[in-house]
Amino acid sequence: MASSTDSSAPVDDEVRQLYEQYQAVESAEERREIASEMGKLDGRRHAEIYAALETE
Image (cartoon, rainbow, N blue to C red; front, top):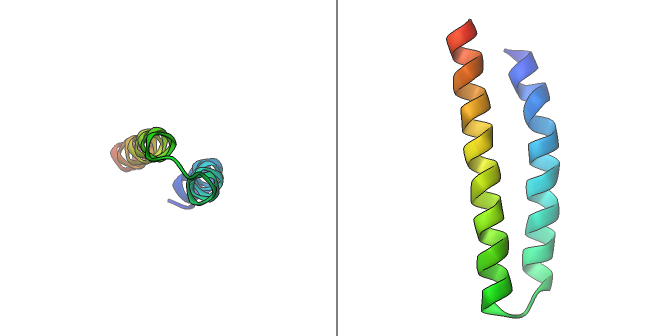
């Protein structure tokens, strides 16, 4: 299962970068866009975890 943790590292980095952007922007519209992107990444991470569990 360590490989599923390794595969999520790039997603974690992307989420971290988006969160930093989220903190820096001032408009609610920009924050909504960034939050949407973060949600997509979270969904991708869950899909990777479930796929890894199915192959165990």
